[in-house]
Length: 89
Image (cartoon, helix red, strand yellow):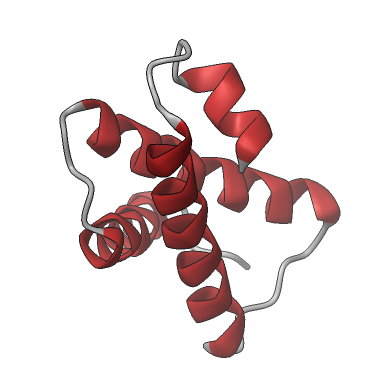
């Protein structure tokens, strides 16, 4: 997540913000794994992690700092992205 913050945030977050973002990301990732989700490849896993991170960073750039809202928003964004994708065969 810290790499994603460096890559996508443009350096706009202070250390306290980074801790919140990392905690939100870790919570979202743990929730996904606890749901029993499986990934077909490391590439797919990395893409999902990237989706979560981008959403958390985007919302934080708009001022959101509530860890739960960041986590839940990222999970919702992931779920919506899955609805838009083609069904697996």
